[in-house]
Amino acid sequence: MDVWGLGACLYTALCGSPPTVAESENEASDPYAGLQTTLLQESAPWVPRRMAEIVHGALLAMPASRCPGADELLEALQSRTGGSLKLRWQMLQTPLSEEARQQRSSRMDRATSWASVMAPEDASDEEDDALLGQVLGQRYKIVRLLGRGGMGAVYEAHDGALRCAIKVVRPDRMEDEELVARFVREARANMSLDNAHVVKVLGAAVDPGSEHLFIAMEMLQGRDLAGHIKALGPLDAPPVVALFIQACEGLAAAHAKGIIHRDVKPANIFLHQTFSGELVTKLVDFGIAKASLLATMGAAPDLTKTGGMLGSPLYMSPEQVRGAKRVTPQTDVWSLAASLYEALSSQRLWDDAPHLGALAITICTTDPPRLSEHAPWLPEGLVGVIHRGLERDLSERWPSVTAFADALRPFTREITRVEPRWLRPAVRSGEGYNDYVSTEADTEQLILDAAAVDALTAASERLPGEVTVVDHDSTIVVSPRSQTPTWLTAALIGLGLAVIGVLAAAIWWMTTQP
Image (cartoon, rainbow, N blue to C red; front, top):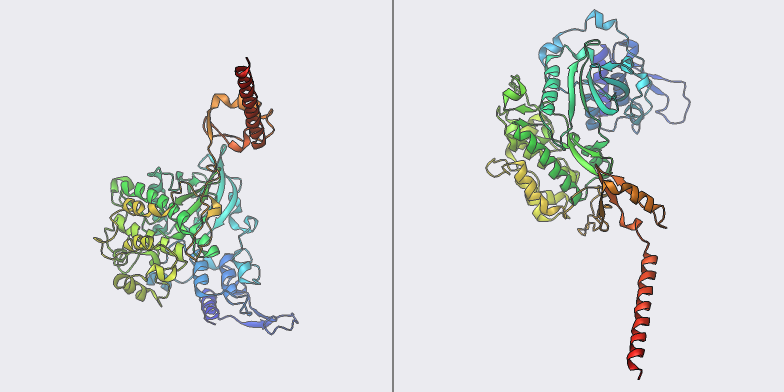
């Protein structure tokens, strides 16, 4: 009922009148089947289609089809805020302009379930389709839509043979100075970094023709850690710890440049699958990063305004909650430890806080619940390392992400690369998995110089087994199972022993003759 009430309040706020529920022509036996809320866009045609669909997803008559909870509704609505939850009184005092009332958004489809509301959007239905086929910055050709949010949209683009992702700010958000400033900070922060575990920004500019503000980034394949946790629950420790060590390396590179991320959380830890199949951690969304080296970033405005907290509250450190103007790299240590806590237990810290005020007080005054309460199968040593990252006293917390990473290494089972199949639910018996062997390291490999490619390829045609040839920057990796088959090796060994036996018998016979 709470979700329906929230949806009704939002409906009223957007169009000025409460929703009305009418009987449809559906004659199904289910008592809910014939009830439908009058479409929001009939009273407020200027409301964007996606927003209207979210509202109606919360107003579905059948409880089983409706938005399942306040968390899911919050997540959906956050995508329509442009990334900022700050609210000023003046915003509510400003009536909707007559010009805005004359706008007509694309028509929504009546929601049949919350799942249909949250399904990936079809680019063909979006207002910004005019960008498809366009060239931004005289080099990035827009190919397809990847996703859309309150700030704008992300597209796949091609720069010659290079595939990349383009984040484009919505034209109607260009007047939001805070949003644009955040967008520029993200571009500057990422462009100043060159690390394998930070998403690489290729360029940022305002397109001279369309006047679109955009960032061009490397194309990532995979999904964020939050998605994996939601799908699988608590994750098995060794590969997750190995991925978090990579995150530490990315943050260490940022800290070396004087950049503090300040919004580390599972949703901003992207697990990118490389061409070879390996999972690699990529830190994303430096939009609220704070640079202590102003010469690197330019004179950024003060981000911690009175009464405001910048970041994701559930992952904030105590000093960040207090609004400290000089947060340190240890702030990112806390957020990273909170994210690892969630990945290993699927329990978010402070998730039961009734409201933001209570959450802020809890973070600043209460020790986190012991991780072993939610994940008793974890080694106590690992639990201790994580909780040291969650110390409220900065003198007790890990002094740097590098120190945190060093403390985590003993719990990786010496994994040097992470394969997708290893990211799986935790074994809760405490036994753990024992098959963390890379497919590249199952048996010894032969590394050959690139000059041997032709000879090797020709030789493969003569062998009864299959030879795999992979070109890695002038190095050829050959799988041993593609060399001489086992049965042939055994036959050759047997033949050799037989020959030796015959020779030995001949020598004995010759030496015993008179």
